[in-house]
Image (cartoon, rainbow, N blue to C red):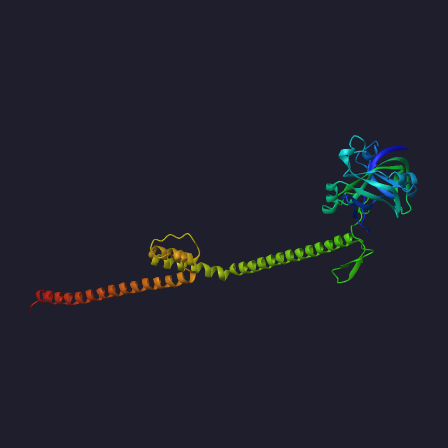
Length: 364
């Protein structure tokens, strides 16, 4: 059997009162240790093998509540966090913030002790920063006697001859034995129950207020996750619907008649653009952009880039009509000139033929 110094940790929320002395010391009971099984690392017990391998230790009630073990609580020091070992004459001034008054006493599966916290900073950490969990630092002997507890938990060692050296005040969540070994609350509330309303609308009651808050927070986080997931699904579906609509439009645009119509529109735009602005350069197959390029060359004083497609279309049609009217007028003038020339030419030819006939006629 091996004797070893270790540190237990635990936490609890119950109902009693915190009181203060005239000197400002905090008097408060707290649950410091408990029976049952706890898990340690092999290095914590000084065992050979993998130092980080877990070892389950059984703390039987007859050892935890033995008169000698309970008596060792009286006068044990209080520390904020563990000093890294036993509190002794060398580190007492630096480590201790108070003490335990009187022997420990059984409280169900726990040992409750009366704490006197004397250090002002430690009191502030308890009241304002949530340092309410307790961790016992003690020496004990470890008997390698594997077995199984009444509830079926397997263990490797049995802890015996437990002697308390100090109790460390820890922040929430740092306790080895969970949240059931802690400084008691400052207000007596009796056995009050907290009500939690589930998502289904059904209400359940939870005795531990802290647990009720955690459960409520968990439910709210689940609701948020569900809402976020639904929103993401809606966005994804909207994307899918938009893509399907785009595919449908592309399929329509890819039809033979649509392609033919598109080619004709481009060809017509290019042909008319050449009339409106001969020699214009095209860098697009969009009919409207072709029209815009032609108008930009034909009428450079207008900012055609800022004009709407409808405005460009109307202006281009007018320009084409003007070009057509000019061409028609030019053709009419050419026709009139040709007709005039013919009228002049025919009489002249007839007169010449008559004149020539007079000189060439044969006399009888």
